[in-house]
Amino acid sequence: MAYNSNIEPPTATVFSPLLLDPSIQPSRDRLHSIARASSSFIRTSPKMDSESYMFGPHRIDLKQVFYSTQLSYALVNLKPVVPGHILLSFHFNIKRFVDLSADETSDIWLTAQKVGQQLESYHKASSLTFTIQDGPQSGQTVPHVHIHILPRNSGDFEKNDKIYDAINEKEKELGQKLDLDEGRKDRNMEEMAEEAANYRKLFT
Image 1 (cartoon, rainbow, N blue to C red):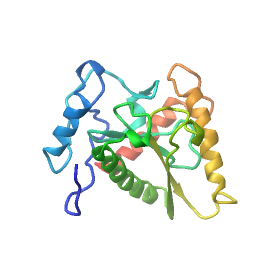
Image 2: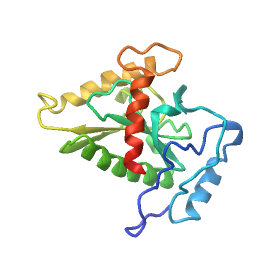
Image 3: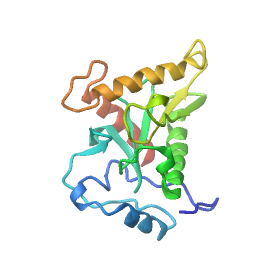
Image 4: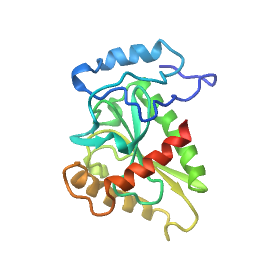
C-alpha cells in the first residue's frame, strides 16, 4: 500500500478486534487487497467470538489491547521497562522483519508514530525509544515481529544505552511468562486492563 502525505496514519479499531478467530480470518493477500481498496483503514469491525489475539505461541487477552488496525495491534506490556512501555505487533504471525510486505511495513510504522505521539503526551515524556529485536541473536524471544515503544524522560536511566539491556531482560521474561494461564509476578490482568482502558480513550 503506497502512502503519501495526504493519507492519514492507520485509523484505529479501538478494542474492537478485526482478526480474532482463525477459522474466519481472511487470507493475508485478501487483507492487503482490502487495505489497498481504501485510502484509510476501516474504523469498525464485525463482532467475533474469540477472546484473544495470538502473539507468537501466546494468547493475549483483548483487555490488554488498546489500538488496532486491519494489520496490526497495540497492547500493554506484561513487564514494562518504563511507564507507557507498550508493544505493537501483527494479527498474522510474521517471524522476521524481512518477511513484512510493503503494506505491513507502512502500517506498523505509521501506527508506531501515532501511538507513540499519544503516549509521549499522556506520560508527559520528552522523547521516545522505538526498538525491534529481529531474530534470536538480537534478543527476540517471541518469534513474532513486534516494536517496543517507550516514552522517555531525562534521567530515567543513568546511562541511556542501558535501556536496551533492560529491554533484552524484559524480552526474556516476556517469552517465559506471557501465557494467560501462567503466573505473573509484576502485573496482574486487572492492572493491565486498566492501563489499556486509559490508553483507548486517547484514540476515541
